[in-house]
Length: 223
Image (cartoon, rainbow, N blue to C red; front, side, top):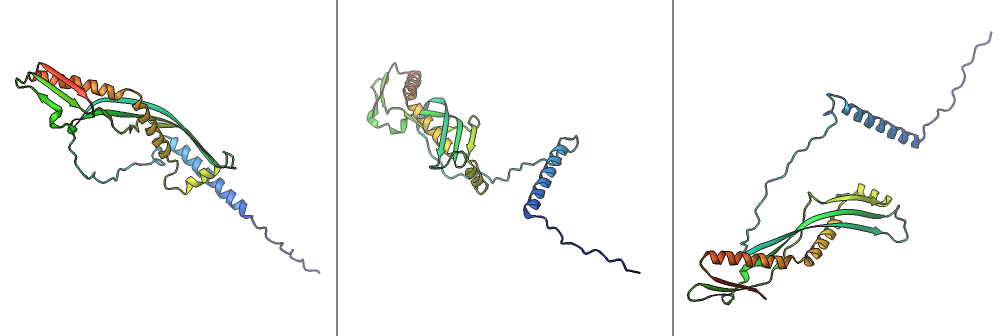
């Protein structure tokens, strides 16, 4: 009588490393998909929700400046910035960015009354006539309004997307914001805003001095 022999065990098949990575990615996608679906169910909306908490410290007063300028006019501007950065010898799909950004902001025009000297204001003995010589109006710094400014589209190459993964400020819009501020400032120079500011300042001073009893008020501008 012969004894049955046990079949020899073959070599155990090993799962390739790429298969393990692929399985982990699939599992992660399944978990995320299930989480999204559960968050849409009644009563489970807050299960995967996020909370926002402001942990900012109090604002600190650094300095106080006395202002002696009269803000006589303000202009609202909007500019569309199309900023593209290309890399030499590489296609845009690999390295390069293009951002379409709408920037909205304001520029103030003012007359610096603190620059007046004693000879710039003359009043006659009867205090019925006044002559004022003021410096020309100037433009303030453009102020970008974040509530009305936004990026329309962003296109980034593969290397730029990978770089954002290791960046402290991925997808920064600082470059297009600076460009928008510069274009808004240039537009303000061509808008006649300073002329409007001088007209408004003249009307303000004439109304103020006439209310104080002056019958004749002359206002001129020059450096």
